[in-house]
Image 1 (cartoon, rainbow, N blue to C red):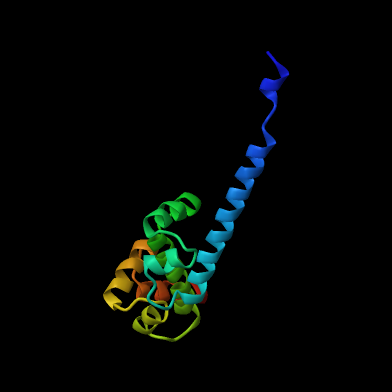
Image 2: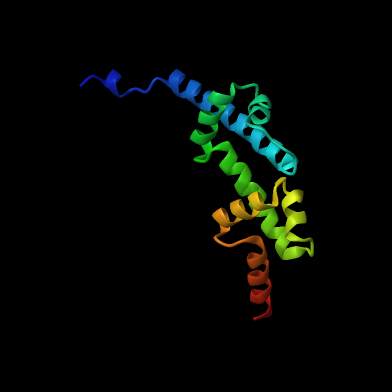
Length: 133
């Protein structure tokens, strides 16, 4: 076996690292966009546009790096914020749904239940009962 067979081409590694760094930077841009705008109506085109990417390619790119679709990530982000609001505020469930970007209260309850395994009002009661124990 020749020693040249064991040598790694550093230019390939460097190029791979640059590509990965660029992807991470783009992902951070998208995640920041979501963090700032989660309460607004956000479309797939909005997310893809913020890093100048084709929406179809963007979906593959996002899932490759996060293991979630953009919609799954956005919904889980919104639900996380909603959970904190249910725990720390006296806003109604409907108000909280609107505050985190859900225009339809039924849709908010359905998606909340999908992620938390209970509806928002039951979550709030459960949380408050846990505090009083």
